Each structure stands twice: as C-alpha cells, then as structure tokens.
Length: 123
Ligand code: HEC
Image (cartoon, rainbow, N blue to C red; front, side, top):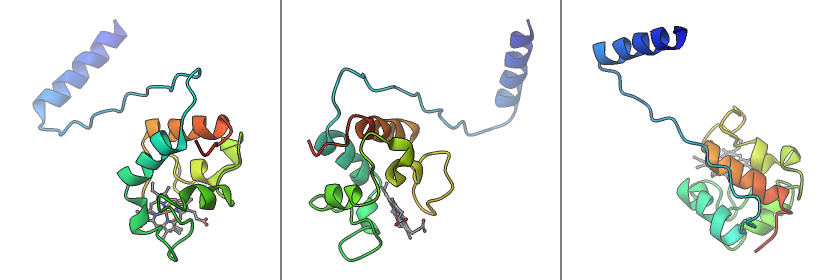
C-alpha cells in the first residue's frame, strides 16, 4: 500500500510540473562466459567520450590514441585482474569525483571492470 502512495505522489509531482525526466540507465551486466575484447569493447568507449581530445600524443597522460592506448593504460593505469586497483576503472567510475572531466556510464564502467578482471588482454 505504501508503495502505491509513493507511486501516486510521484506521479502527481511529475504530471503537475513540467520536469524533464532523466532516463535512468539500465545496467546490463556483461555475460561472464563471454570474453571481452580491448579492440571491440574498450576502444569504442574511449571514442564515445572523445578521450583523445585531451589524452592525445604528448598531451595529458595517459595517451589514449587507438594505437597507443593499450600500452599506456597497462603502463600504470590498469592492473590486470585487479579493477579496484586500476585507475582506469576507479578514476572514471560514475560515482567517482576524481576525474575533473568525463565520467563513464554505469555500463561502460562495468565493461571496463570486467575486461580488467578477465586479465586486461590486448585482444
Ligand atoms: C576535456 C579533457 C579531458 C577528457 C575529454 C578526458 N580527460 Fe582524462 N584527464 C584530463 C585531465 C586534465 C586530467 C588530469 C587530472 C584531472 O584534471 O582530472 C585527466 C586525468 C585522467 C586520468 C588520470 C591520470 C593520472 O595520471 O592520474 C585518467 C586515467 C584519465 N584522465 C582517463 C580518461 C579517459 C579514459 C577519458 C575518456 C573516457 C578521459 N580521460 C577524457 C582531461 C580529460
């Protein structure tokens, strides 16, 4: 019953005012039996956020250009099998406030977490 009262109140609020509803991201955990790929799953995340606009060659580290990204990430930002100890995951997590620029979406963070957990392979 309480649930319906809350729901009704929320509906009243949302219909009464012209709120712009922010779509809540649906979290889709990656299938643990499928091995994620750096080229197909991780690089597109970097492209999606245009990370190289700031993290290009000779600019702010790490260098995230497609040809150098793997090497620079493994050179201090990714500890294979340890996502919690990897800046690439913790620094840009949606809940983190460390990176002053982009943060990842929840699904992208989960994808990076899983890829690191699977050994952070250059596949
Ligand atoms: C608008 C510029 C900009 C964009 C876009 C950007 N970054 Fe950054 N990034 C920075 C700056 C500046 C720093 C230095 C610390 C800070 O200000 O957060 C930084 C720091 C970092 C660090 C930590 C570096 C260190 O040595 O401690 C990582 C990892 C990182 N960024 C990854 C990314 C990734 C991955 C993306 C894309 C999803 C991205 N950044 C997009 C500007 C940017």
